[in-house]
Length: 306
Image (tube, rainbow, N blue to C red):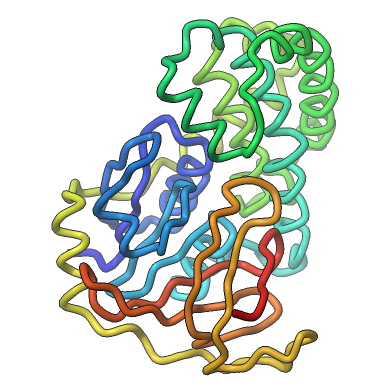
């Protein structure tokens, strides 16, 4: 059995980015399908209340947010690397753009088109997630302009893909490809006719996207949420990685609260096990799962004492 457990749902765009990374690495993994909205009773004990998907679990170590999931996959399974030699840092920068500006154009287009058909429970959940109204009328009014935005950004990928390399940064796939493919996948999954329209004049980007998809998803096996929680309960968290000096002076043993800086801002409290420029790990004791360590990235998350 693989050690990797991915908590996700099939239509999750960020889940797809991780699934593609597992395919690029050729890894076996355990697939735990979670609801696309709260509550998630067998996942919440592991995350401390983190609302987003996907979440990766390895034993009693839990990784929240795609950024830290990808970093940990690459740390544990470095061959092939997510950033081949000479590309260091570029993939992470492109992941940030693709997961924010480019992705948000997808959200507005999709829900501006189909929002009136979305179940009320989903709308209420997303309002709690974002902290603001799910304004279908506003998204509908903005959708045509967001299509312009989406096409303009996709055209950058078309220009890059026309350069002759199989992938965006060379002949080997990497994080840049996974990140930039995610908004293509999301728009096509949500509104295939609009995707076809907006990419009709982008043959190089479409061919590149097909090559990324051909990487597959590795070798998933189904697992129940109950089984994943039992694995955490029976496991011991991995030893802490070395910590770096902190701008705020955090050190292992400090009690802190972590929360996202944009949406899904539910605070998660714990004791620092590890802190560095790219991650912070909180030790937490739970009634349902015992001792767990929950890992977060630093970029995109706030950390405060208490």
